[in-house]
Image (cartoon, rainbow, N blue to C red; front, side, top):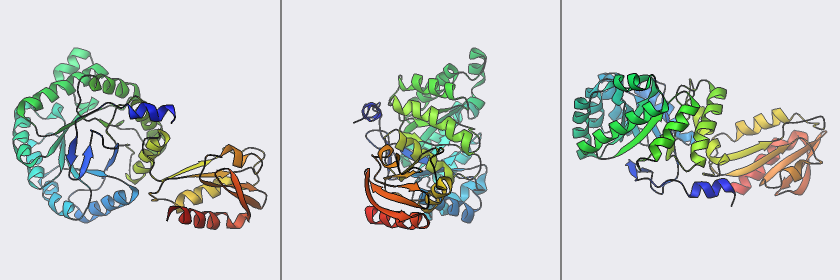
Length: 358
């Protein structure tokens, strides 16, 4: 077992909460979630996007609830999906109560924009329904006194807001709680989660907020989420990417695969290419990635541009191709199986993968 697996197996023990049939915390695997970018009032569009997220491997989904019409759509949305549904609420406590009545599995509230008395009312409705409450502490909406005290949304400011809000919900008898303390600054995000995880055993939702488009978001999320997971911190993750949320799922599982935490989906490795490469490795890699999109079974697949070093450099791969000029070698676990023509690379590889995974 490598060091990252050993470290993760010692992850911080948290109390479990249940979103529908999905456990978060305790001894459950790290859960992957996302949030729709559709108008929640448009049930058809929202359900379509949730189903796309489900197909990609999303296990919990959150939707924005900006008004009563959006809240009223929640019951119909929930009927048409199979994963737990969370309502995202800002400012208006009455929308949180309406969402709970509509049958959502959980709500996300930000204490910085909903006062204590209003939160008490939300908890009163959540308790008999065992609705999970996620305290979403955000650098952009901290309580005014905390901002003044720390001079800005520092890690200590976020931690104090989280612990203050947690104490409030505990006093009110909230049925189930999870926490997030998000910042667009990776260092701040890492520091605040370290602080809060040392002070409570509630499950933690990890994420770098406002992380940008695909590449910047993947970089920031991999660093921030990866550091914390390596340290045994985190029970559920969301990679935030501007625009269509479906790519968030691939990045999230990529982080978990890289950490040897959850092996879901194909782990495609390919060499960076050099002067020895005699095939169009980029085209091959992109085509294989596209054809295997949505695959749930774990398999390490190597695509190498050199028949001399390729099989040896990817000896731990389950299957792969090492290419030469016009031809290549199909190999499994570092052992050459047979030569194939370059035009048959994708077809043969996909046939072999189907045989291995079925």
